[in-house]
Amino acid sequence: MKTKINNYMLAIMAIILLGAFQVNQPASLTGVWKLKSFIPEYPVTMTGKARSAAEADMKELAGRLKKTTFIFSADGNLSYLGHRGKWSMSHDGKTVRFISNTNEKSTVTIIKLSAQDLLFKRVDDGITQTFHLFKVIKEIR
Image (cartoon, rainbow, N blue to C red):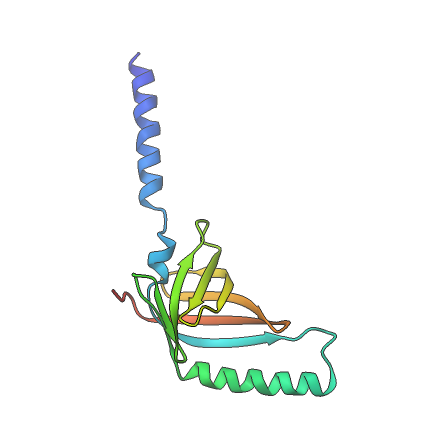
């Protein structure tokens, strides 16, 4: 009987400890972030003038992104490059959805999220864009 109780208590303790070490993904995202790198991947079918125009656009975008901050607040607000709106993370922590104040919607796929690094991808106009951000300020309320 004592062994059953000990096994039962051990199982409960394990569940509590595992729960304590779970990362709260949305809380990890809150804070002020800056761009570390931006990598566009162009479709193989994009050639000639279309490719040149896209490359120029991506270079200009990367320049603007380097000068801005991404601010994810705990209340679900997001601002960057003059864009404002609401963000929400999926339950599995794999995607973040953004709805701008003009009702434009976009979803990004999280590759890595830690206390100091955020790596995510999005596809825009057929171009896969990979963003690597680093955290400047931990938490914004």
